Image (cartoon, rainbow, N blue to C red; front, side, top):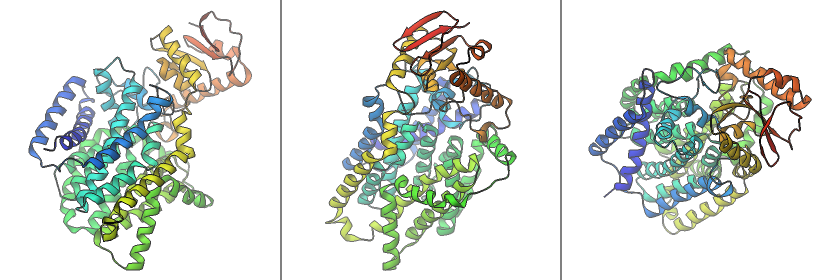
Length: 530
């Protein structure tokens, strides 16, 4: 019986169908219970009709559990039950969705709603179902689910594509000790992570021309433009190398129309703002820096992919699959460098996501050659897995980026304590001027709207998303006012703004406020202005 496999694929199918249903229903009327029921019913129907692989092996499951532990331990152990490194945007945007997909992020801001559509629609379903858990707890848990699913799908793809359990195990071993998945998790890149789950699900069904590829294809576009871009690269190269996929590609492309709401909400503003910006320029002096960043970012699989390419050149042993994945690896590397050098927010966004396709290509390049070296599958298999695990964990725990993110750069423990105390004092959503280094994260944990929205990605305020918006000019002015208050201790500036509370970290700035002190917690003072 393959109950675990059904659960894994069922979750992926449910997420894709629920996000697509939410996107369309959200244009007229969305209801979390209704969407859950129809998506759950659709998932059960699909699972009853399709043939799925056997349950993942014990070793594969253990690697997936390792991924869960490495992804989840900061939230559970280092800074218990709050995400100290994730951007607030994912949870805050999810809270703005009500019976319809809103035009703006009201009541938090009048910025136009241009965020990646799929994830907040999914998060909102569970936020509505479990209102006792804060939104940031729901989004964190979903991220954990995405990390697990990514690991398992790498195993399933490797096992199926190369008809080898051991290939699947090498794939999931490389994944579980990679840097990218944990960097995305700690940063709170949950829309990106969900899109990656859809991409891997799409790849699994793509090569056998299964109709479910047509479900996951539009779900990718709905979830994030980054994976959408490298999905296009993937199918173009697949059409070149594998003739049997061309008919399936022609069938799956029209399915992208199911992601049409995302085009008008997310893609259209992105394209317009990019085209309306100043002439695109590049800086070739940055090429060495970009090239140097690739190996540590991609991790151990980059080394194995390079060694694999050297093996192919020396032995002249190659197959169509090997050449395909090598082409994916090299072309995604080149595109990463080219897009990263263009001075544009949207191209930088795509470059930062293309590195993930570099990673997956590196993993599958490695597997495509692994199956052609018999000794690696026999007497050297266990030592190889242990070596990957040993080296990967060393890189994981010595990574300065991951160490920084694990420790929680978005908020200090003292600020988090105050945020929870502030929420206990007043649990209602109110606007507050928060004078502390981590004002955006404090606002998220305390259920408050910060005066300075343009801080630590409380909302998606990137210029490539909001350049043409009048509200964007307003948040720029508010950011300047906030800075002036801090730098010049400008009481007059405070007198002119409209907020209910003024929260002051006296270690950050000490002001004598002409307003009543209503709450005090350690080195924090809260004044009521309105």
